[in-house]
Length: 52
Image 1 (tube, helix red, strand yellow):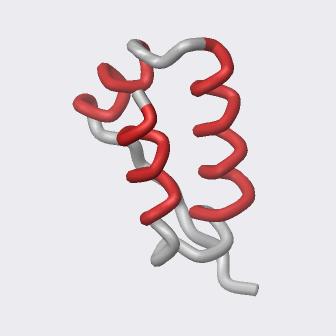
Image 2 (cartoon, rainbow, N blue to C red):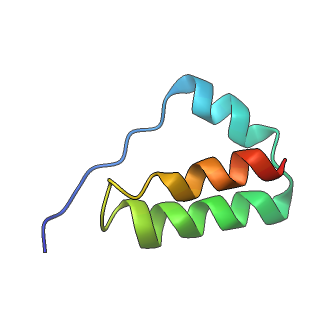
């Protein structure tokens, strides 16, 4: 399996700070379990943003 490095922009950090605790947990799970395994699955993060 190929390993990827995840870099989060300053803008993303600002947005994540606005998330509720539950949304932060969901974002971390998606980043760890989906994005790090396949970075082309970014659509799942858009789903979190649209639910806010």
